[in-house]
Length: 417
Image: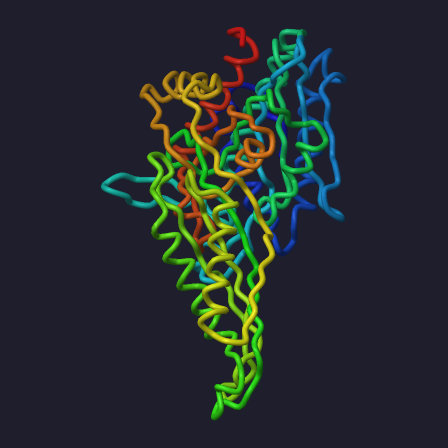
């Protein structure tokens, strides 16, 4: 991944970077972020050495171990003043490579192909992470590189700091962004943007994400005499039914919509002819205001009590394994205002402002820090993420590179914050 050397390289910068990044396996679980992290660290180091001019030694490049052998990669152009800075945060990992890919578009092939879509020719990049989120990472890298170059040309630091943070573990427990917060790379005052696929929107709010592991224990017996046992699976069915009804009765939110629940995995029983004495289910709740984790816990506890009354002899318990609070839109966010200006300048149209269905690194920062200047804007569509034949359009990558570069230049150089 070479540093661009002249303006003629600039328009294709993120596109070329995206192709290189997609060809690197950083699946989680799988190869993880070792190779891509090394490549990005080398790229950012060369970028600062070659483009930073007399201020190159003031630009910080860092690696911080989050998990054994898994490092966040970060760089920061310091500002003239302390206080809030601009941060682009992007995860390096992808989901598993998976099955179901076409022979002509393998997951690490970084294949570029033209397709006909609604009467138009669309150029797409195919591969695992094409939209989630290596093309977004490439756009952020191009924008950061442009500001390093601008710093070198001017021979002065920008008004405010500008950082890029490349995280690990986003596709699992999001421990990369948590580490970046603990180590001080992200603060409550910073303006933080991730480049997840947003279908052309600025997305500024997230449902909460609450996870449970719920266990019901019973008593074994022969299936011909079930009254001598206590059926843990039957009791779990009661629990599941009760939670589904409780979630369905929750009020919708005007921005985030309805709260939802998914019972993603279940285990229990030995043989068809044995009354099961244990059942375990893993639960994923996506919660919209006013429903929060405390309310979710109350639902689970109530469902367990009902099941214990319905099926004599069973006992239920749960462990809370994930607690991410919902993030509501702040219409007065200065980052939102600046981002809308950047989109209008580059695209020529007002940006739609929506919500993000999943949970992102910026949502973690918003929830942990109470930071209202955290949002998402990136190339591609979330509907294609995690699927076989994942892809991103060329025009999306070009647009987002332009917007991110415009936004950074506006904040760092042209207007005071």
